[in-house]
Image (cartoon, rainbow, N blue to C red; front, side, top):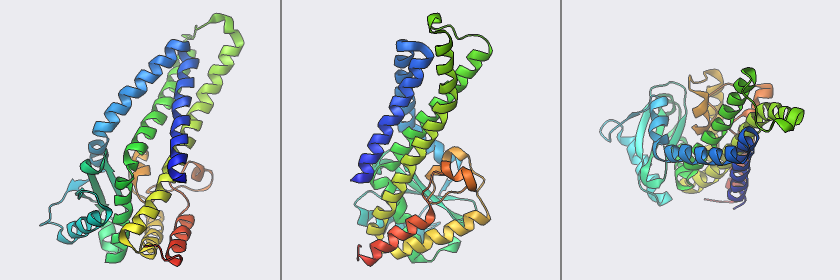
Length: 286
């Protein structure tokens, strides 16, 4: 319940930030245009984000004949989760990782890398797939897609403002004078950073929730914890060559991030995730 409430508040903050950027750029009309822009982007995100995510990451569909055990596990866990069986995809990468996509449980897919299937034992694989089904059950993919689109749009608007200033196109409310220019400069710097931080906070919150949901689906929190530890180690050794925009979708961060860059990580610390799962196991949650 707390994670859901926190996500709602973060989404509201992201929407408000989007409107403020529109207000700074074009006054009331700019704010209304920004809202319309957000509505159009969210519409396309709702209908096409799954296909885009699968294509961007080179995922290919596999039949039951090609991957019988994988399909069997997904079907079993989907039944335990109380959702339709999602489509199954494999990513041709030796880095072990996985993600889920789709606008709702009826139109969902799970994708795993070849490296994941080679590295994990059956219980760990069930833990990872349960985590991904947890995302589907909680409708996290839609929330994350909308957050990513809005954060990207805010950065786009900030870049537009930058070019407008460079070419002398900023002329709204000349009476604003220096104050207006200062506001514009602050917006160009602060807005994209704030949007990115809010997006990351949303992603981290949903990862914790998917861990908890996944542990309940498979009934083995320790199996998921063991899998997370392995995946974290291997993704540090051989980071995946993926578009940074899709990094938030994976169960562990597929990109190498150290030092200050971890502030913008789409995933919570792996140690904290494992700690929470082990606490669930100690409480006998299954």
